[in-house]
Amino acid sequence: MVRSTWLHILIAAVGALAVLLFVRLHHANGAPLPLDSASAGHRLAEAWCRDCHAIEPMTVGARGSPPDFTAIANRTSTTALSLKVFFKTSHRRMPNLIIAPEQADDLANYILSLKRN
Image (cartoon, rainbow, N blue to C red; front, top):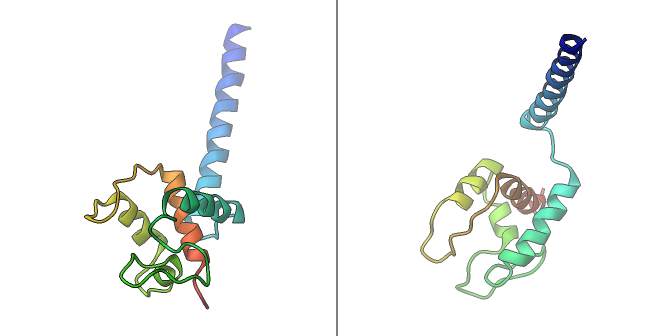
């Protein structure tokens, strides 16, 4: 009886891991992130970036200030990966933020949502 219970628990755990792996791979294949991610990224930008960057679409930062997020989004070199690498790199004029991977995804998704087609 005890062995049967452990077998059922093991099968359920393996099944749950398979589902999680499938969901993670679905997002890794280039599928667009949910709009919730861009909204979460916008909230992070308001909390962390607004003091220096223009973070809203159609706003212009002061001359000589850090680039606005729309300008960053429209650079040909800007990708989700390049943004995430930038977030993890130390810069002279930026505070060294500690950003969790999920937060980096959200912030990158928000910045990329500002890209003009």
